[in-house]
Length: 348
Image (cartoon, rainbow, N blue to C red; front, side, top):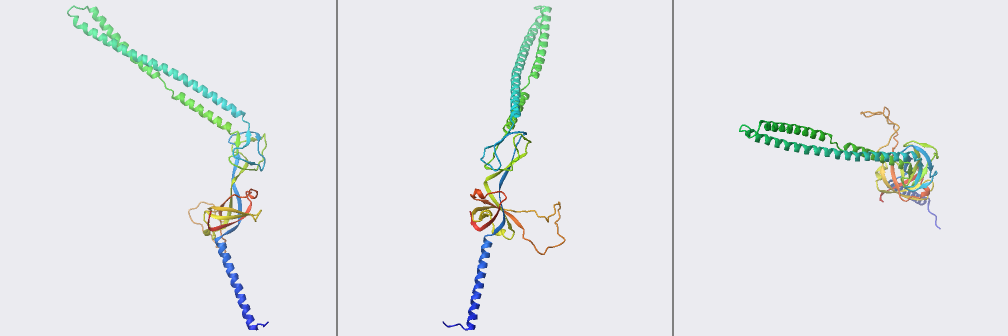
């Protein structure tokens, strides 16, 4: 086999070296394009929505139906308070409502009686008017007959007396109508009292229902530190319920990579507890603001300019929320670390 000359060998080596360098450059450029199109973050935290389970009413804990780390379904009873005081309050409110309704019925009967008295008074006015009209006609008929001697003076005086009595009776009847109509009341106050008692009964019933605390959604119980016999105050947290129906990853991406991330992009998340299991995800949101230790928490209408300038600028990171699609239950823990890759241009 013929040996290459030193010059030819050196040239061939240079060509091979250039080819290797060029290949490495192409690979590096390709890797840069891939990393740019698929930004990765190793600062990722798994999370889920949580609810602080608390009672809306005060009371002593009668029983607890869950234990730490138990899984519960929506509507399951978590704990019960002593309901006897609230049951008695419901009975009292129901009795108060019955009293108010009875008073309203009595008021209705009274109003009907008052209205009947007013109607009788009006009829008496009509009768008095008729008597006055008759007495006036009688007097008017007798007066022309007196000079002719057809009637006596006594008859005329009796007619005048009858007319005056009719006028007095009419005036008395009119005053009786005014008094009777003034005494006629309404049911507004009685009806308002009934409505107030109904509202009190509804409130008492709502508080009684609050002695039984149920799970608002499927989830897992964490942070349970109370036991039966303890006393709870309203809004006092008993434990935390993790909503296991929806999991998400909160990934911190540098501001230079945000242009390659859009809402709706597909993503892949790897939990550090099992990096071989790829979890599908969808970008749901990109943070628009963060807090910084360098910011001065004082209200001011003027811009704040630092006296010194750092020549090395550290890229700020913004949170990107990724909703996980059918994640494995055994890997899902609130606060667990993970790695995420967003696939730019791929819609899910």
